[in-house]
Amino acid sequence: MSIPKLEVAGLTKEYRDGAVIAVDNISFTVESGETLALLGPSGCGKSTTLNMIVGLEQPSSGDIRIDGRSVVAVPAGRRDVGLVFQDYAVFTTMSVRDNLAFGLKVRKTDKAVIRREVYKTAEFLGLTDCLDVRAGRLSGSEQQRVAIGRTLVTKPALLLLDEPLSNLEASARPVVRRELRRLQQELRLSIIYVTHDQTEALSLADRIAIMHHGKIIQAEETLRIMQYPGHVQVARFLGSPPMNILRGRLADAEGGVQFTHAAFSVLFPACALPGGVRERGPDKQYALGFRAEDIILVPPEQGLWKGEILSVEIRGSDAVVNLNSHGSLLQCVVEHKRKAAPSAGLPATRNAGAPDIRPEPEKEGLPATALRAAGANPPASDVFSLRTSTLVGLALAPENIVLFDGDSNLRLESAFVPKQL
Ligand code: ADP
Image 1 (cartoon, helix red, strand yellow):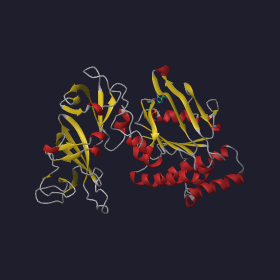
Image 2 (spheres, helix red, strand yellow; image 1 turned 120 degrees about the horizontal axis):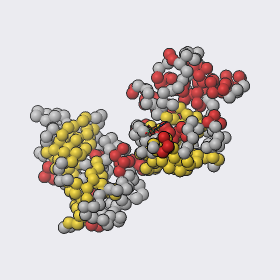
Image 3 (cartoon, helix red, strand yellow; image 1 turned 30 degrees about the vertical axis):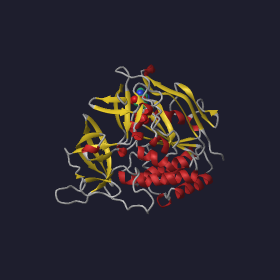
Image 4 (cartoon, protein in one colour; image 1 turned 45 degrees about the vertical axis):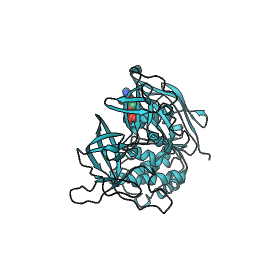
């Protein structure tokens, strides 16, 4: 059986006579065998989109096609689309076997076929040992497996997963995520995975479509959307922490064009400005973006800007440093584990030649997170600590700065930014 392709064209859903536009003219495709993540904050229209695809909601306008055939007029049960809800929706008083058999019984499938398919599905999902256990006695992740099994057993052409991990305890999520990945690889279904959690989208999706206020603002291959956010809201949503965004204005200045946000400014050489940037002055807004990972902390006198450390959040192998830089809150990420240097001939850091920030082992008077600015041969002298209120310098390679149009919020193509990754 061929793996189907889904096309959604100009789909809109309005409630309360148009007072609420839950989904606003969205179009996207899910290619055969592809997993697309619909990623966005709560209330942006993800579930409404799924409900229209499965047939639980009727669109206000637009079309949904599976393998080129419109299914808008096809009743939910006949669309060949399986939906797994976030709250499992298993019958807790029924056995796992009866839960798995439910969809096939409704379809009046032959008993022998039901027995065979239920067993095959249970085997695939590792549920054979609990086929006769009441579903309500199972753990959250086992119940989620039953919910997925109930849908899979009916062999849907398209699988829709609505926040399938959000009701699971944190420790169970990576396990179920791995199971979902295996399921994707072995079944080669076309899947839409709805989530507000970027970690899930990044680890499971071939492509990610970012939703915001009912619209899809960017849909792109997973790696590319991370590296190349085309919209301010995408840049604000992706990454941990997300990109630093400052809204401000441009003015001609000596040596180039100056971006100003409150007391914070950057001078762009005129040749480095994106081609579309013509308007200057007080009436036109731009947004400047740079990643927390791209900021390099250096001694104050060596930085492009200065910043005062407000707080330091230690994570696994790095730390997020919150800074007040000229009145703006900026976040930067600093590694605090020294990695073994690669073999000779390879640069030891991403930015060869740039100051490199490495952790200083704990010693008297310095916290474990103390940093030093170091070159290829790290000098031991210019050590400064990452304590609150410490003044540091912020260095940033110009190619890591991106500019967005302040009105459309779309990214402006920059002379700095490589178009092809
Ligand atoms: P998400 O799944 O991204 O959290 P939803 O699709 O559930 O978002 O909801 C999108 C928007 O539509 C929200 O503002 C929500 O309040 C609204 N909405 C959803 N269902 C209804 C409904 N039946 N009546 C009115 N508004 C609704």
